Length: 102
Image (tube, rainbow, N blue to C red; front, side):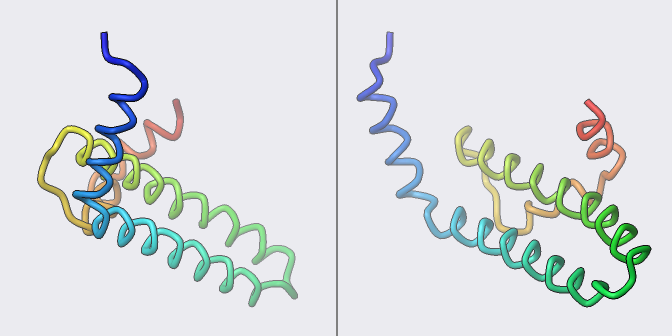
């Protein structure tokens, strides 16, 4: 049975090997999320537009969040990946909606 100390060491090694990819994908996610929030501030005068935009943000950020999880899994299973995999769930949006629904 693997001990916690060994698991932490393996985790640190994976992060060290893929640090650029992980930091890049998290920065891209953070930048897009902050950008969307800033745009929502522009709609602050109209309550209807604020509700519509908030609903739209959900359908943009959830697939991005799933993309982050996808990248983390690919790193864990030592598969080839890149920052562009952050947007994989937009190409197959049907799967993304099913995961959100669950």
